[in-house]
Image (cartoon, rainbow, N blue to C red; front, side, top):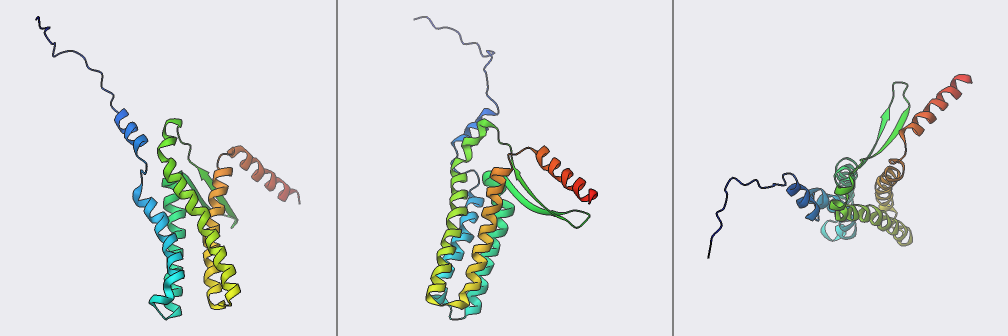
Length: 196
């Protein structure tokens, strides 16, 4: 048998950078901490609403605990998880004239990177849609059972979670639109106001 000598100086093609891309595609959840907190505060507020009377007889303690969980949820979804999990964000900006402008943005994701966050996007949207529906059921059950002291808390839950839902739906639909349309609408409003 004849052995073929191996040349140690032979060029080897290395795919540097593709390893990260492959790892991102294989990862089901790229942001586990953000995904956890996206669901933790939402589910925590619902569980606290359902079982708070078992642990504390104080209405004020239950009210404040649930309201804090709802507030943490609103802030974390609006400022952190929306950006990380689906690449969307919204906020309000007040200009020099004191006018309020709502800004809805959608991050442009490359085609090869869109599959890597599919699970996260599903978790984000399901949590965003299902929880306001649960708070709406709580609203009608509170009215039906005449527990009117809980009505303000349920309305706060519906309001905070529906605001995030509305903002992100607007980002998803409106964030893809051309900035030129928004600018032309703003200019036409300015011209109309000056002519009056």
